[in-house]
Image (cartoon, rainbow, N blue to C red; front, side):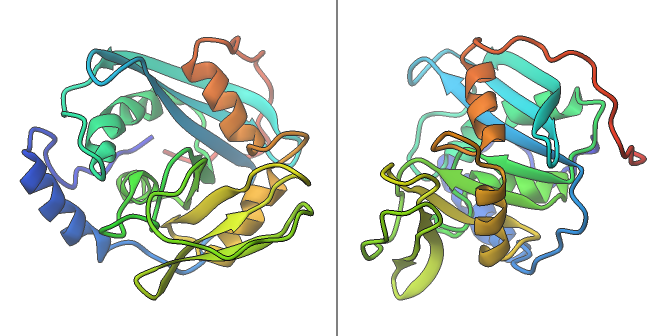
Length: 235
């Protein structure tokens, strides 16, 4: 995959915050998702606040959600652990994994925040801009904002509001389980982001691309057998 070079990575936390504020204005919040044949899940496992991390990208064929390719990279983390700046710590690992992909996903689901971030520029926004691909943030917990109680049934949702602005939504993917927190990453609106999270769910709380990416990042997912891809896009 092609990666846009938007900034350097050897920056201080103060410089990283300035970069976030500058790049946040470039995030597209309109739905630009067309046909989706390949959807990717992104996750990263870091053992502690220092040392190595393992980043994983798992590409699945849609609508079957059958894995077609997995890319896993393990490397040292160079940026310090700073809440709100985790994308500067984790994105370089994921970018390296993306560079090794032969497939070109049409949509990325990211285990992390997107627009639901103090500076409206979380991991999913950062990765989306670098890849220039529709990207959705799907987090397991809240970083900013609050929401009203949502229904118990699958598909229930409630707006996540921070400082008077809708920044995402709590979405219940299965009846009786805790919701996930969905937000815009890039080139998608919130309604489409929620729709695609639900479309990619099967029998688990997490959408299948993220569930498998979590397994791959933890070293518990075998490489998929080579499968034919219905659409190949030029890189």
